[in-house]
Image (cartoon, rainbow, N blue to C red):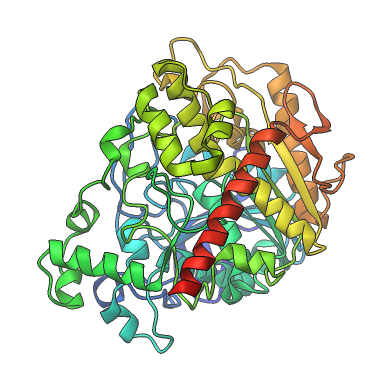
Length: 529
């Protein structure tokens, strides 16, 4: 049989891709799915790409969105060296022999707190996952203030009267482009699974909640992250999003700090000026950071993060899911045992206890029983663990409970495999264990991207986990005995794979009660207002 052609014609023109060394897959990189968001298109919703003449090379990744650097020796470094506002491209790996194969499509949304990351990170190479039977897609979208800034002057330029969330609009534009073109790569436009981790998982949650994405995704996998917390957090740890008016105020403050009296003047500022204009939030000096740089945590609510804008998100995601108005597609969601890795922590027991009483009120003693602070070392561990729970573990737990209540197929997992990180690895100590994002190379069948002493057990886990993901993408059911979520059991990915009780139920019950109290308080405040 002749090798499939490396020339594919999409709506805008012809693309030249590359055949993998083993001949099993073809790759097409740096494909524009929208026009460059530069000049007057900065802070505008993405516009369909222009057509081109001849054959466009699709042999190299496009540049990533402008971003501040992460720690050089962190687990998240690499792949971001080539940056540009002209970043709206995607990459396709396909094992299809012809356009008629109609394989399941898996679209990966990268992590990075909406502040850093991109599709060229080696961890996300889609060749091996694609070779197992799917069309795999990765993409770049706008980040930080260039991707999420809201401002009254910008809102006035839109017929819907809102602004912000351009990075999520980018994802929707990419999905729309795939709906029109993925069949040319042998994919099935009616069977698209969107999957991601951390901010990528939060994006999956928001896409399910947004009416603008309806019909563009048919399965969803959310790994360590969602968007289901109510507003406000005195700890400075983000578990919520701004509404329209607070987001406007953040945009006004940014323009004022940059001495820009109009949006045109603000558009004249460089990406670096925009990214670094404002200081860290008040109280940030109380927290220490290990595995990643401050941009991971800084600025989450000051114009660099998604907002409830009234258009892409007419209401908070929790309200959408609680009412059953989300896309009721099959869902896999879960988190890792070591979500504390990379989270800020407070190595001051007295301050930690005082903050706990201020934050949790009548629940403070229960909190301090679950997260003790007998000394500074214990406070550091407890604070990082509690922050990991708030930002990740509870979010996915709540997501599973809300989605299964709608009657949609829902599957819940717990990842607890400690990768074999070498003792002399130059990464932060707090990233050891089943750290945040540890499952990515297992899912992508790409363990060798890290030069670690992987064992047969690691390769078996990779085969099992990616197999579940692939079967789910094909059918909406991961198979392998993974029962639908019942509130009590989870699929455990560790040295052994299988169903077992959901871990740390007492901690999850605490967060359920805490966030319910927060929602009731917010509702009372709205009623009083």
